[in-house]
Image 1 (spheres, helix red, strand yellow):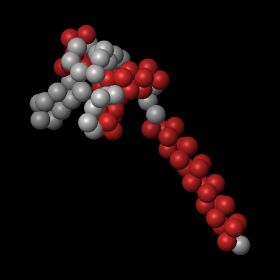
Image 2 (cartoon, one colour; image 1 turned 30 degrees about the vertical axis):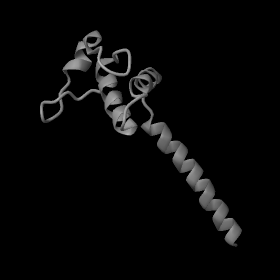
Image 3 (cartoon, rainbow, N blue to C red; image 1 turned 60 degrees about the vertical axis):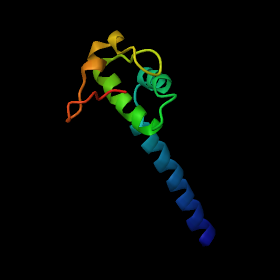
Image 4 (cartoon, helix red, strand yellow; image 1 turned 45 degrees about the vertical axis):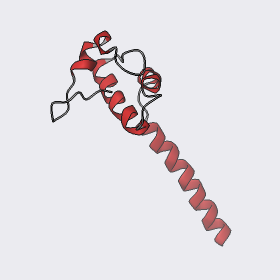
Length: 88
């Protein structure tokens, strides 16, 4: 009986994680561009999150890991609630 319960829980975990990963994934374009942009970030998860948000809104991400924001004015000009740049 314990084996059946353990197997059931394992199957639920695997199925649940695959559904969660699919719903959290962005577009392949943004994922690849933000992966490059955030490759040297100290807080990788935060960088990927905000880069993904900015990329989805602007459909572009500046080249390199820092700077070059003039390549994408929309990305450059997005601000957070405090008036600071939103995009990494």
